[in-house]
Image (cartoon, rainbow, N blue to C red; front, side):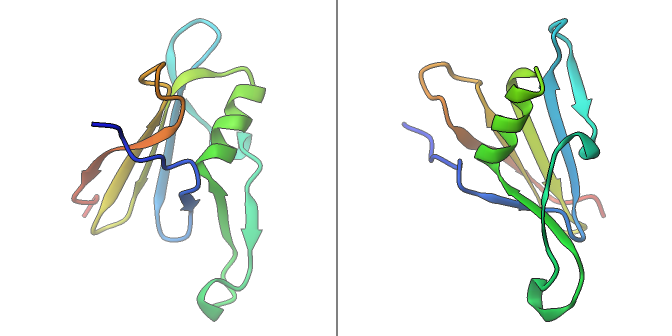
Length: 107
């Protein structure tokens, strides 16, 4: 079964915890620091005035590659109630982001 292409899924920070994992140039999996990524900012999310950082998954993988990281890339987005894990590069024949799993959140 072919996985759904999630390249255009938007990852927003807001009330969520975002964890990005990639391989460094030594082949070790590392947590990518949030400030290494150049996020877009939306200051009118749901008319709250809160600054929400966001990017599409494809934009995240493009930046990680430009920074010298190697796939497999993982992005975890978790809130108190739910979480989603996305992966890129796990299957060479499928060069897109895919939903890898769900969590019950961190609460």
